[in-house]
Length: 196
Image (cartoon, rainbow, N blue to C red; front, top):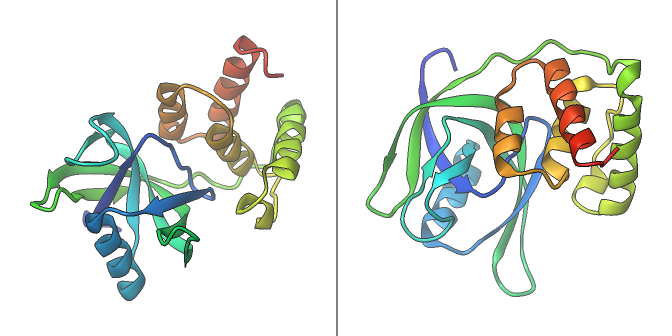
């Protein structure tokens, strides 16, 4: 993505980071069309935290930094709704967004630099152990992933997604490009919440 690309944006009250999974139930026509197009064209969409508005109805305003996602799995649920699992691939910056007549938000975006692989420093072993415990208890779709508990980016990303942090904190952590800075900030937040 050297040049800005244009993709659909899925505004949510959730934050997804690269390497993460996000189960979604799809029922609005604009998102059913989006999923169909993504599957047909093998393309992605951007998961972005809502700044103003709702997940349903009129197109919402979103934060400028989100995550490019692809559909990793899909099925029809017992209630007839489409269920997909989005897999986060890369952090992106939305340069501009527009709301189409069907209320689908689309955005011009540019990929943000991916950090180089960083082993998890020993001082964050307690975070890796906490994540390992969460993964053992949480179930699908995360139980199907191969844990990378020695990878600083992966450990930090999964904890940001899974811990009950305020969305503003999750967004700030997503926006951090350095996985070690993310881990330090995350640990400070967790100490304040008495999680570790």
